[in-house]
Amino acid sequence: MTIRMFLAARFRKLMFFAILAWVTFAGAGFAASSRWVPQWLPFIPFVGFAAVVLLVLLWIRCPRCDSPVGQSVGALNGKDRFYRRRVNFCAHCGVSFDEPYSSD
Image 1 (cartoon, rainbow, N blue to C red):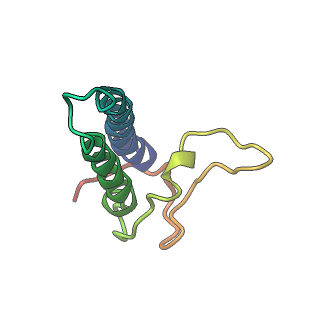
Image 2 (cartoon, rainbow, N blue to C red):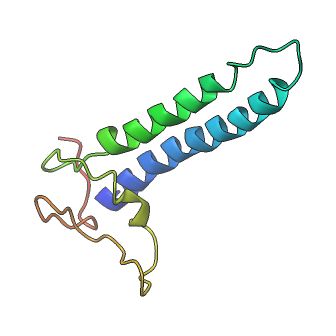
């Protein structure tokens, strides 16, 4: 397993929860339009989405230098385009994301 695969797997897990929070937010918004459901109900999944954003920024870290790489992790598996480049290395320590990942 490479560092790229490890970081991408973490990012995919968090994006699953982010999408789930947004779908729940929409459902809670529709449910809150009825008079039997409290109006503050959509706030709960929105806070969940905010927590996922914070986790992406703080939990996804370079395994070598332990610096946060969450802002650029969305471009790990993307193709090079004229408006966005694929991320190939850690901006802090310079380790290639194609090197083998070791949990040591």
